Length: 132
Image (cartoon, rainbow, N blue to C red; front, side):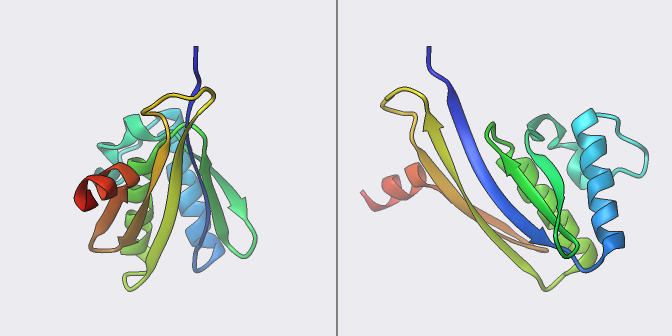
């Protein structure tokens, strides 16, 4: 039996401690699936994909990381924070797909560019299909 991984790690800088507390509270609700009425509607649809951890980092930042996925939920989370606190901001990150055993379809990755208005992402598989 093989173990599959979807890895990413990034530090998201936020404007102040109040913003970081807001983001950590949202992440805690999502991870516990204890959604309050104040939980943003734009994030409700990605709760099932919320497979990443959110930890405080230096300088009002958040360390977002996972070995089990959650890329779409993280993109939505970052976009919500940009819409709320940094409408002109842009966040980029990469992820990898990996496997504990050599499997033909188990390796790859992708990248995303997130703004308040748009999320653009592409996997390495999509890139290969486009350029083959």
